[in-house]
Image (cartoon, rainbow, N blue to C red):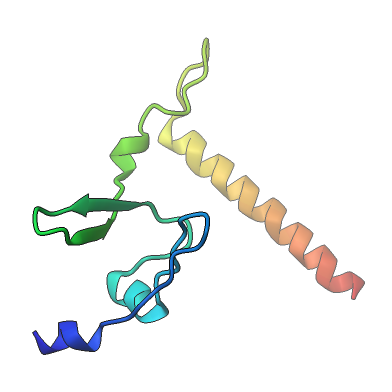
Length: 98
């Protein structure tokens, strides 16, 4: 229970209802920019905050396009490699201009 006492931090609610989670708590809970949080009020009026965990399975099928067949793994690998090469070329071109 001593570790819980050390983690006591306070935050002020803004006029918009926003609260900044103190850095030490964000680090301890592994909360990063863009994370979604789940809030739960317990029966003893304590608010629980948990980072939402996401699985790649949650995204499966979200990018389907009508009348298009899904890419194969090989096609995905080829597209990723092409994007990396193009990005490297753009980055290299910028560094040469300096």
